[in-house]
Length: 116
Ligand code: SF4
Image (cartoon, rainbow, N blue to C red; front, side, top):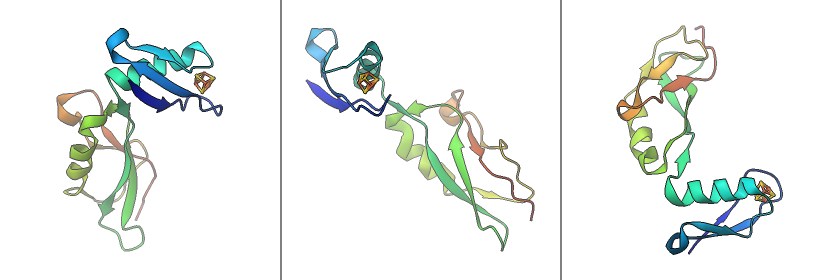
């Protein structure tokens, strides 16, 4: 059995997922909790937010995030990739900072504009 708190709505139901019983979910207040609990147990993913260096005295860091959720097991490796990045202004929101993480569809993208 695995236990999770559903984050889909503010009610925060305490879910229990039984991996030995076809990932049956209990404790959910609605069906969205079933989908969330099963996904968390079988293929947990996260949108990753962080920041990278910028060659700028005024704005030395630029916030970034993945444009898709990636496997939770890849989050630490993805964060390490950011250590080697330094952006050169101008930077525009949505610019791809690292493309095709782990040869997948997710990219790290800038989430603010930095002009200088
Ligand atoms: S299971 Fe349904 S009611 Fe409970 S927190 Fe999740 S979305 Fe909200």
